[in-house]
Image 1 (spheres, protein in one colour):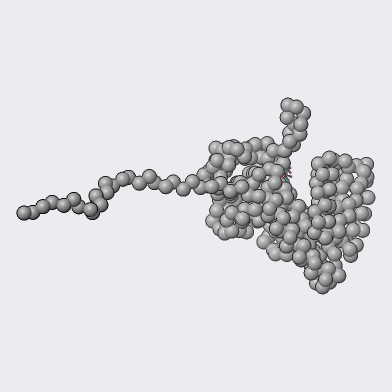
Image 2 (cartoon, protein in one colour; image 1 turned 90 degrees about the horizontal axis):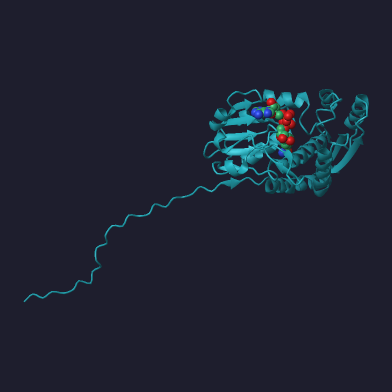
Length: 314
Ligand code: NAD
């Protein structure tokens, strides 16, 4: 007679709806300090080669006029970082009562000094000076800030070999830590100064981006930024860029440095981007401080080393 056995086969599984694994995209903080440290480590090696093979030690002259406290801090930081990697720096401090002609004469003598490979004038100058004339007096071969019309002109015409302004150069390096190939991306650059916005727009163009260059008269800045894969804020307006100015997944670079004072009278720095808000949507974002600032100085040092290398080939 047939008998029944209890099957040991596992009971058929009832299908259980799988909980979908939602991969949360992690927002990247673009650490300018880390990138600057690695660039400076590379420069240190290039300086060793210059010293060993050509008996050249790069030299940077810095002219500072007046007693602007922010300028004093920036120049002290540039000098300290020069020393760290073996660049000799020479600071020329002039009183704000100095005549324009004296600055032009000083620039002329530094232009002719073979020990100096880079020359910068710390900006902004006190209002009474003709800044354009002063920048044009700097030899384009020593213009490591890249602000002489010849160097800016080369950049704007797509001619290789000029010095690239330090802040825009640093911004491109920061962006390319997130995405190397920028071809076809939309970029919005807020701020159109010769120092930052205009040269950066040209560098982005060179990388194949479609660039909107915004200024204080732009009617629809939020709309333009919302379409951008890359947003660079360089207007000098605290927290101009809010969360609803940025599309999801954008790369956001905050150039702005705004000094504010809190209710207790304590000074603090904020950028042009509302970091807390924008970082909820951005793919990657630079902090302030610690983003663009350190890269600006590192790129100044890089331009000085490039200049010394070019001198070594003469
Ligand atoms: P700037 O004053 O020369 O130029 C500002 C530009 O922003 C102008 O083109 C102006 O039209 C535009 N602008 C002003 N308000 C605007 C608005 N509401 N919308 C759109 N555009 C607006 O300034 P700059 O020298 O180019 O510097 C800009 C900011 O970047 C400042 O905060 C400065 O401190 C900072 N900065 C930082 C570094 C760094 O290393 N992190 C270097 C240079 C400048």
